[in-house]
Image (cartoon, rainbow, N blue to C red; front, side, top):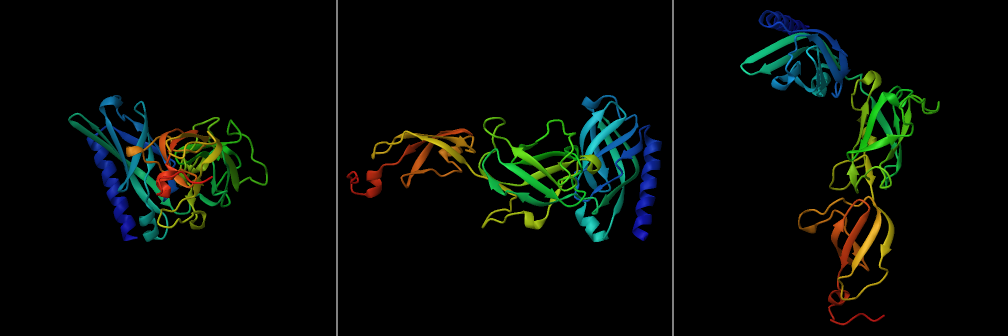
Length: 318
């Protein structure tokens, strides 16, 4: 209780001082609550937030936690995204209520305002319980299942799903269509970008980022531990994209090597790393095929010499 009284007293002093020093004020905070994991989109409403946004640097603090400024609307609104306060909320064993401060820096001037309050809560957190499948080529369809009430009855309650930085598109185009009753409040489906449409996601192991809308105000959904796959010697991931081959040409080449083999498909790395390195190893006839160029749908490599590999200097018998 002593800690709460101290914080509220400091907050009131901050508000009083800011009103005396500046004309700016915060009249409303929406929403006034959010997930302890952060990611909630918060709008500060008020007056005299500055009319020259190009010469004004805005910063927002919720308690000691930065709230990343996203947008500014004339001189009455500032929008920010909350940071994580999970450690403090866990230590407190419940909700943590903190004051909100807006600081505006202009050449030679610093203005500030404070208001009460924003509440971090560990009970305001959407969770993903299951992702199926957990591996597939670009264009794969994913079904995400959340805990009850994590996903709303329409896809509007989920702002976006990303895998490896690429959007996983919802089936309905406008975001307003009701999901089937069996899926309501529990699951949704989306489709990864494909080479035939959006730029495909390259081969790799990725997190699945789910950004919530509706009453979640932009908060990210957390993954339950058993959703993640733990690869040996690597970081945990939620979905793995693997390449899919469509064709290989030519069908034959010299045993001396040097034949350029063209492989089409999807999910290939989009560019070669320094020195021609490729995250995807290519072998033809059991021997390395050195990458020459690559895109998400086409890979060209140069074959190795079979004679050199045999160590005989002679072509292998057919």
